[in-house]
Length: 290
Image 1 (cartoon, rainbow, N blue to C red):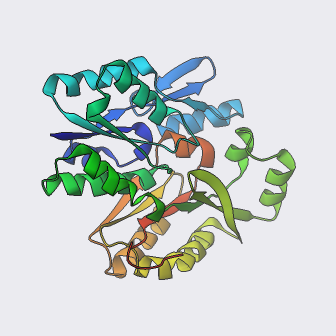
Image 2: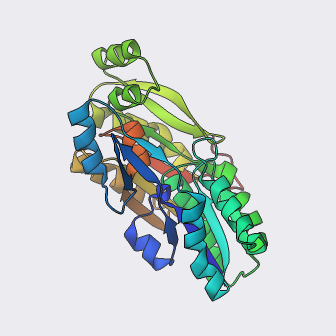
């Protein structure tokens, strides 16, 4: 039997995690002198409150080898093979830590580690592919891992952020850039390419209008996307109307079997800040969606 494990950055939400019996290994959130466990004793809204009060941004840290070993004990006792999904190795050490834990427990022959080269529900899309294969009866761990890895280049992850304040606090842009962007009402599109964060198109205007423009730019790609699933993910502090509007537009394409609306977790919250929204999907392997 193959059991799916994932770090807490996958942002699938409790319902999908429960449906597919996914074992979550949480990352840590450091806020001042205190350390919290992602989604266990800290929430995105609490992160905003602390960040705003302290005028700085929390940091995150991968789980320890001991944490991974503890998580693996259940699989070892049950004789399960483990397919682990982690945030991009360019952004975190979680994949490497889990691999080392499996080796340290002499269980590496039963563990496959997928470097998603992604974050948030970009990881979730890959997990759903694996879950679908396992449900269909595929039981060769490394064959499933190989098939899932073939989908990694097809994941399309992007979002538009409302403010550069959080990225500035985290040291990813300087104060002058953040101030200028604010004055000009510039809202950058953040993209993930080959496991790294980058900046795409720059929008201007009110966030709701920017999100509409962002969706319009994606629509042609969505029309030829992989049909299995699409996520509309956001970081909160955003008008519910615009979230519902974008979800409705995606559903109106009549392209996807599943349209999920989710709230992003700690990692995206910390680095992108409030008012961020992204549409996460997978390009069809048999077609081109650039």
